[in-house]
Image 1 (cartoon, rainbow, N blue to C red):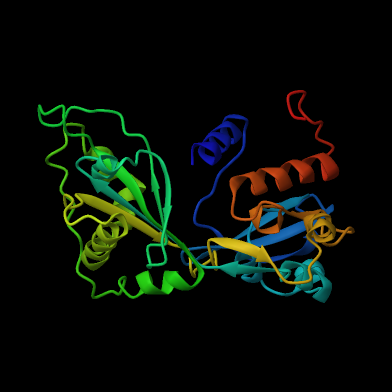
Image 2: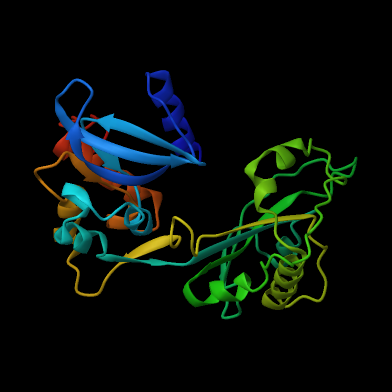
Length: 297
């Protein structure tokens, strides 16, 4: 996350403006305020509508977000462009992070790496945990575990535990020495897992590791990318699509218009930040004449 945050910060420092929670609803050609030809964008922000004019537009968006733009105008009203956008299919994705008072899995010889299972948690990732003081007891170490990393069919299992009626899980930060305010003030607090989800992931972790006891989690957060503006957490090329031919075409779907598309959805590294960086660099070099850095080979 530090990468996009740093890029946004540097963009603002160089005169750019970042507007969050603005949804692009329409895009078409039109006249700019100075009378020259350009592009006209319509945004929604709450109940307000905003018009933005531009000489060039880069859409760093996945398929579902692109399909949320009005299918009209010189670009998105073109059936060929729509076919290019639909050349990938979004897949659901789910992540669940769980905090324990100490890394009990290290007693099993696990300190880093991955475990894979056929039960719904699917994948579990570990990290090396540095020793921290904890209420004067140096033997306790706060530990965060990526307890579930799911895609496709197993995401539905966890979706059943996220209903509006699901009981809330009450995190307990009282036993850790470090200031807990960063938990409460960060996005972590916006994605707290329900009680049933925490109980179930704890049960499955015990089953996966073949143990009868582990300390209860003191905090947990999850994110489900199944729907909404993302449509999924990752996009995959459709069968029979020749990605090596489609990537440069979708990058500038109508050569007569200065509108460009980039992101991991239409890359050779779908679902990875490397894919987003790769297509962004390729687009900037090809269509914006950006010279390749000396250190980039």
